[in-house]
Structures are given as structure tokens and as C-alpha cells.
Image (cartoon, rainbow over all chains, first blue to last red; front, side, top):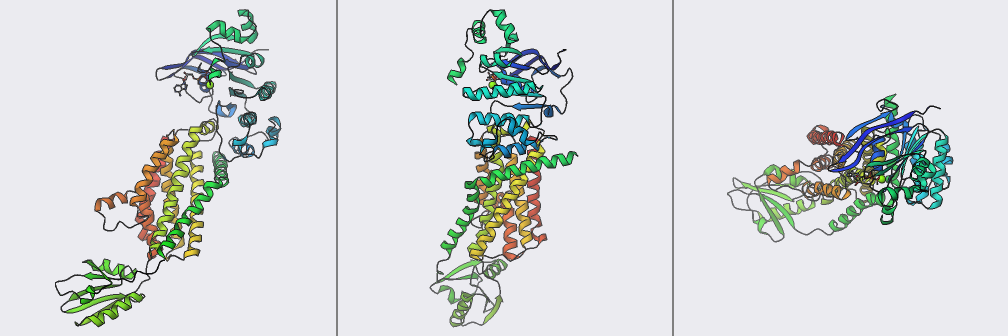
Length: 244
Length: 337
Ligand SMILES: Nc1ncnc2c1ncn2[C@@H]1O[C@H](COP(=O)(O)OP(=O)(O)O)[C@@H](O)[C@H]1O
Ligand SMILES: [Mg+2]
């Protein structure tokens, strides 16, 4: 089967004043795959993701969609879950689903989303009273209301308990099985190994490794991506989380 | 098709914002209860017994002062502005206007005022010169009649400015606007929905407070209700768009709070919410004229107390519409998600 690049980055950089947050990244994201951006806090994962989403313009470099310029209705084709999203106070998951569905021409049936993300139990609860995992499922559902072809997830499991984390993994696998392209960031090695077909390891805004989890491990002769990162940089990937 | 899509999105955001407001019991209740509490407190404070002093306005001349002015219990106000004095008489802010010309004492009283009738008797008893009487009619204006539009207007100002200004900045700071930016919702659609929701909320809350306090206190309202509603609508819009302009880029709630306070404080002080600026220095009155609340209250008082017509308040409405236009232009141009 021929692999189609849905998104292509060509020497994409981002400066914030004198901070070089992302340094000349070039890679392709293949249709139907799960692409991972891996790295510790501050590596540039969110910045890179938001440039691909069209939320932030790159300082230099180019992003192409299926080989051409990013189309005007790109927002309709992508679904985004940000690292931190507030919702309106006093609204329930139900209210939010209705609101976000109204933004699009052909939203998925609400019941489909409620079932897919198991929202029934807390459908009419103020979103401020949801647990971390419930909230994450709602945000995933909101990212999916318009049945997008590409889904971006920024640290979808950070701060979740192991069970909720596995629930999110399940969802990611299902979205991939439905043929969607996924782009996710994480600083959990295990997560990247389990979910991603292809990944880049970022450190200080630059790519330090690129490949499938298996290939990267085999190449370095180590057992886990954790060890790989340690051997590359002398830092531990989740070191930042311990202090966060 | 484009328009239908836009309307659908505006409607959805409008409904969501209304829900958020209605379910926020604390601030919702406060918006309704706060002005009623102020009105009731004022009613209690100002319903005490009359002070037992007659007020006479004296239009001074070269001739000997009427002896009445020296009586105990008589408070004299001297002025040369006859028409202003007669206006005050019509509103029962003074009990008699008096002057002396060509050896005769000329006086006016308000036919509706008992205090006027009493001072008239005192005058007849104390004056040896010939008397010429004039008569004015007009219900008195109590402080409560005068201050009610001020309180309602002040409440609208807070609801309008904070209800959009502060809320939009809170959305931005929390990252909600960023989430909306990632949808096909446009800035214009988002801003329109915020304005519509706040106009509706502000107008209905004010209407409820207006009707409720009027049932309790029966304050003066002689003009057209529709005209008053029009003033409220345009006044609310002018302040809502001002709130949006402030919120267009501001990133921190604390800073927005400061800006909003800097904007409301002069209005609270200079827009004649609590007291009239009559007699204050001209520059103060000039500053007051640059504030939307001043125009809204002037127009509302003209309608409620003097039955002013549309053409009489048109200049005020015009100024308010300019505020709307400027506010909307700034917010649509500067707004960032
Ligand atoms: N809006 C911004 N202004 C200035 N610096 C920023 C901004 N956003 C991110 N950065 C900086 O860019 C670098 C990368 O940040 P980010 O992409 O958020 O990393 P990650 O998501 O991997 O934790 C960090 O040094 C961060 O401080
Ligand atoms: Mg991040």
C-alpha cells in the first residue's frame, strides 16, 4: 500500500523574541498513522503541534497539506484537543456537545459521541465537577464532533490515573482503526511505544531521533525509549514532570 | 447559506452564554437584588418627616427685602435666574419665588403645594406693600424620583461592562477562546452573540427591577415607556461595546478589572447617578458630557420626570450611538482570540 503524506513540514521554525522554541523541523505525517512528538517539558512539542494545527504561524519554513497549501476549510478537517482547555462555567457535557455541534455543517449524531466516549453517566453534570479522566473524554468528544480526518492530541494523558490513561489509549486505537490520522504529544515513553507508528524525539526544539519505536530501539540497542533518551541527552524524559 | 450558517452559530453561542448566566445563581440574583436593595434603603432614608422649614427663592433687587425672609424657619435661596427659579418651584424644590419691583411684591407659589399655600398666608400677614401673585403648577419631584434612573443606569453600566468585558477576558485567560478559535466560529459571530446575550440580560434585569421598585414605591414616571426602553437599549449597547473594546486584547483578568474600574469610577462620580452637577465648575460638566452614562441618565430623567419626546432626547441618543459605533469598530478590529 502506498503511503500518502497528509502533512509535510519543511524546515519549520518558531522564535519567541530571543527564544528559539522550534528549530527547523522537517518530517512527514502519513495518512492513517499515529504520529508522536516525544520530549520533556519545554522541548517544543506544543509549539510544533500548534503550528501544524494552524493555530500559530511558523516564523519560517513551510507546512503543506497533501502536498499543497493548507486549504481554507482546514479547520473543518482537523479536530484538536489542547493541552489545557477551559470550557464555559455552568455548562454540562451535553450543553457543550450541542454548542460545538452547532459550529459545523455535518456534526456526528450526539448519541454516537456520548456512547463512543462514555459520557452518559455525567452528561448533565457541571463540567467543573468532572474528574480528570471524564473531562478528558469530553474534550476528546468535542474534538471529534465534526468527524475530522486528522486529530491532534496534546498530552492527552498527562495527569491522569493509570486507568483513565488506558481508556484514552483505547480511544486513540479506535480512532486509528476508523482510518483517522493522529498526531499526539507525550512525555511518557511507554505511551509513545504503545501508540505511535512513527515518532520524533524533540529536545530543545530540535529533532534528535526520528523513526518507528521499534527501529529506534533496535538502532540504539536498548529496551525502552526512556533508556534511549537518557543515552542521548543524559536527561530523563519525565524528570520535568516530577517537579511540575 | 453562509448567513444561515452564521445565524446558527451565533444562536448557539448566545444560548450557551445565557445558560451560563442563568445558572450562575449568585451573580444572577445579585444583579436583580442589589438595585432593589439600594432603592429600598433610599426609600427608608428619605421617607422621614418633613423638616418644617419653608424654602423661599428670592430674586434680589435694590428694593427692601420682604420681612418674611427674616422669619425663623424660613430658608432663603438668592438667585437672579428667574426661569430656573420657576422651574424649581414647579418641581416643588422651593416653596415660593419672590421679588420686589416698583414698590410691589411679586410672588409665585405652586398650586399643588401645601407648603406654598402656608408661605403665601405668612406673606400676606407680614407684608404691607401691594402683592402681585403668580401661580405655577407641577408635582414635586422627590429625591427618590430623581435618583431611581441613576440607580438603574448604574446597575446597567456594571452589568454591561463587566458582563462582557470581564467575562471575555476570563474566557481568554482560561484558554476557552483558543478552543473556539479552532472551530469555524468567526470573531464576528462570537462577538455578536456576546453582545446580544448581554443586551437581553441587562434589559430584562432592568425591566424587572424597574417594575418591581415602581410597584413598591410608585416613583414618578410620566413619559413614554417605549422611549425609556429605547434609551435603555442604546445605552446598554454603548456600554457593552465599550466593554468589548476593553476585552479585545487584554490577557489578564486583573488588568481588565483595573481598566473597567478606571472607566466606571468617573461615571459613578460625574454622570449624576447620585447627585446633580448643577452649579459645579464648567470643566466638570464638560468631562461629564464625554461619558455615556451621563447621556443615558439625562435622557432617562427627561422622559421619566418631564415627559420629553424623541426629538428632545435625540442629541443624547446620537452621542450614545457614536459610542456604540466606536466601541464596535475598536473591538472588531482589535479583537484577538
Ligand atoms: N507564547 C510563548 N511565548 C514565549 N515563549 C514561549 C511561548 N510558548 C512557548 N514558549 C517557549 O517555547 C519553548 C517550547 O515550549 P512548548 O512548545 O510549550 O514545549 P512543550 O509543549 O514541549 O512542553 C519553551 O521554552 C517555552 O517556554
Ligand atoms: Mg506542551
